[in-house]
Image 1 (cartoon, one colour):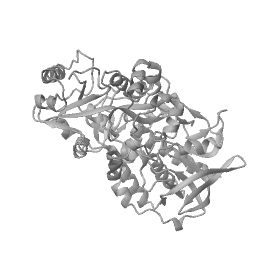
Image 2 (cartoon, helix red, strand yellow; image 1 turned 135 degrees about the vertical axis):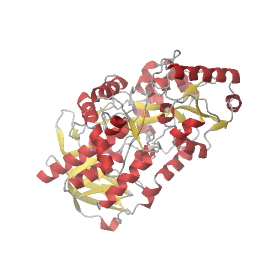
Image 3 (cartoon, helix red, strand yellow; image 1 turned 90 degrees about the vertical axis):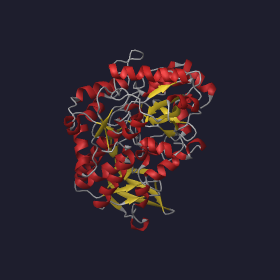
Image 4 (tube, rainbow, N blue to C red; image 1 turned 60 degrees about the horizontal axis):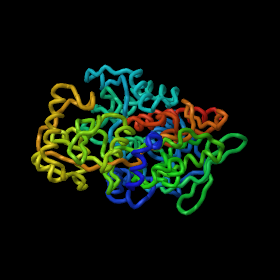
Length: 501
């Protein structure tokens, strides 16, 4: 990140709040792209549909094959429709493959099994607070009230998210992830792809949708470039699940110039295509300036360090070896505090016991992003911080965990385990562009709306291509909830519309 920019951000709270996670920039194409390649290994092995088999007509066309698109396709098929998925990238999965923390949901059977007394109302209020009270209340209410049933729906298809953890801004363990505690993205995409294949839903890759067609006020299909040819495909309904625009730096800086120079965690296909396609039909957008920066990104590779690492007990220290903030605050606040440090970066500190709870750490180690030492003093030497200070910081933290009282910064969650089992680990991090909260304006039926509030008949959208659900700042774990819950709704609603028309 540019030092001048970071200094100005540290001063300007207004800009920071606006920056509350894909340009194919050079900073994001090394290990981060390798991460994606590994995460979609089975997606690459997926038997995608042969371009020559693309039909001239389908009931429902789904544009984009991330979690929202795959969920929409499965739901539309279950409703008796004949859907097709068109993906512009060479493999399926989109940004969903990079998802790490998990899926937030309340009042679930897995919470009940662990004796966690959560409520939809608490989930709603904490998400609303995290979004600075600017979330669309109807969309947020729909999300929390349908979160438990979405967990059950996934489980019914062999996609079981039974391991619970916590993310910043949440007071309960409601972030659901695979049983072994691993990152949710690869597991989720592989499971959804398996179900798409079992239902014989055609999925075409390298299929770039360039236009959504409309006649007499109704969507009629799309133009798509595939196998070097442009084809017009007709449909009764079109679902846009193309993701956000976190990789389109021109678009990012148009809405938030303060983010110029930041690395991005997004896969390079997240360029805002769906937003542009819908705007050509008069679609309204909302919250476009609300672009989230994630606090823990390894800068040389743009690798996002999962929030689950902090959720399992890691702490953040500055170059002096001292904690400086509540690590489990919301992403925008933690990012602001890191940017406000003299050095503009921080270190995640944790022990070997945590690596067994947060499996993603093993991947970071494999990528060479982790410093490791047998003792705290040796780790301090590795990252050039005062050994006595870092040791004192760990001792103070471990006492806080034992007492269940963080007197320094008031942290109340992710304090189930101390950091006392060597070897010890550190990852150097700073904020990076992560998620675009803004996008197409939709209602709870996922219909795309115009500025006057009227619907564009036959056009639906779900996932990061939409706006309003997360407000000014997204809570970690709510994106996966968003794509599954509203992806399902888009599939069901588009299918119902196709049947009627």
